[in-house]
Length: 220
Ligand code: C5P
Image (cartoon, rainbow, N blue to C red; front, side):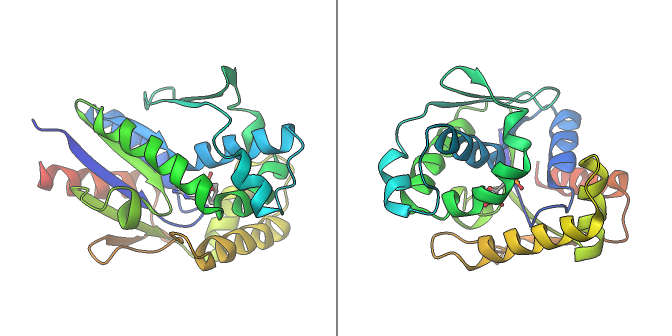
């Protein structure tokens, strides 16, 4: 089979990561979590004392960290300058700062280039999840999915993942992050014209996975 490229975009808490990993594993494809890359560069900025609210400081530093993603869906990895940051990139501090960093064009240019080269080298094909994959990173993807869900469903799923986080504050943080991601100038969160929209509010994870697997198989 020729390599198949699948782009899965959508806001936070729609089940993008769980769906993308499962689809890739089931179909023998590679998997790339592009949000983890933006989180990793944000983690590096914070650790190196860069003021994330100063776009010119962020732009000047954008080329410095070396970010490496492991693309096995059964155990994806992410390192910055050789350090495993899979845990530290999930903190609330990084979550609250990532939108500012990812809005900087120099950051996006750097990370987008990395994403394209990873996708191009996936022999069997790849599932790439993010916000601008179908619109900007891989506009020629074989299949584009846009996942949505109600704000309530997204917050409930996220607070289930984050121990001790209450639904209300999670909901507010998610809405704030989506608003920032959707309104930025450079490749905002958006549904590509040719993407298939799947509303996951009333679906189980298994149903979403089955739906996407079927759509990929139709393209193969
Ligand atoms: O997917 P996740 O919620 O981990 O993404 C973290 C953040 O990374 C997003 O809120 C967004 O600011 C940024 N991001 C992006 N473009 C992508 C993927 C993520 O700007 N393709």
